[in-house]
Length: 53
Image (cartoon, rainbow, N blue to C red; front, side, top):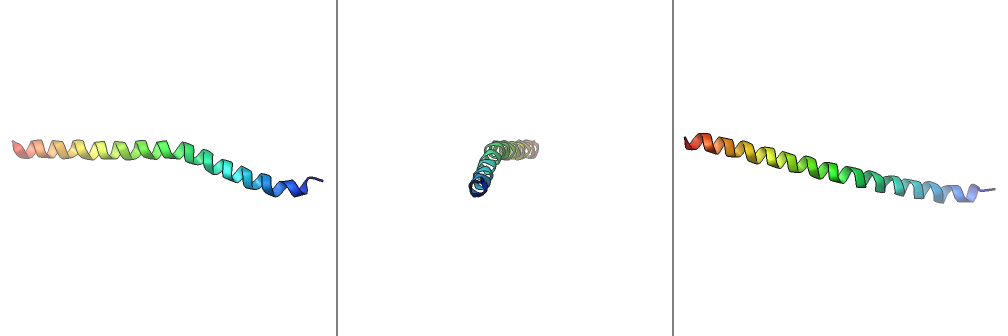
């Protein structure tokens, strides 16, 4: 009886799932790349301070 509704519901569920994954993974990726840049910058400062001595 409801077989004609299953395909749009599956498509809607997949789109919703992609949206949720994006909403979760984007801030995690941004935080990870920010920490990497911060770590790289601080290690470069340590090296430049050691070179200046």
